Image 1 (cartoon, rainbow, N blue to C red):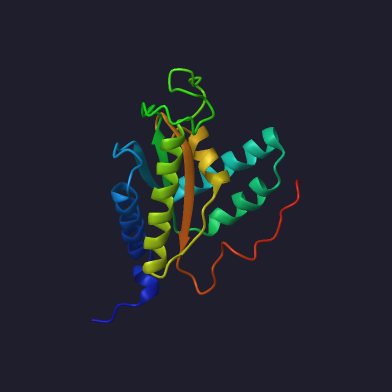
Image 2: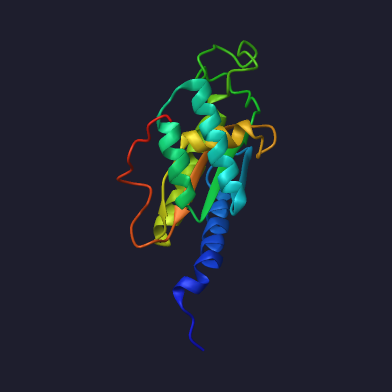
Amino acid sequence: MILNERDSRHEHMLNVAKQMMTAARTAPKGKGVDVIETAVVTGKEIKILSDEMIRLNGENGLMFFLRDADNILSAEAIVLIGTREQVQGLNCAYCGFATCAEKPADTPCAINSIDVGIAIGSACATAADLRVDSRVMFSAGLAAQSLDWLSGCRNVIAIPISCSSKNPFFDRKPRERK
């Protein structure tokens, strides 16, 4: 049997994405409470995510949303990592309020945000260990959050992955508004 890498690339990338989700799940948590949610976006949903990023650019005017919207079209898969909002009851004041009771409902718990960051680092380390190109994208994560693809989650970050001969997520050219 002869197995050409190009013929097995998509399956391999899905396996890498699954390992990245496992790494995010098993990453240390600030209080040991698991509020992390993950998912993988592939196929036509990548274009839907790109279109949502373009729509969000119309609202926020941030030009890098347009660049990133083009850029994720080069991804084989996109790993989403977010957090369900759950106040951790530490009264740590990391969120800017003295106690958890004083924290407004629309202010994220800082411990949850830290947990997402740790999960992202673990997932990206897994991608690097498997020699897969990746990039952390707030823009694509915000679009996924807007689409509610991680139902009820906040602080959603996207990690597009690729295994092409050149990393498509660096040396990116800005896109001008049409």
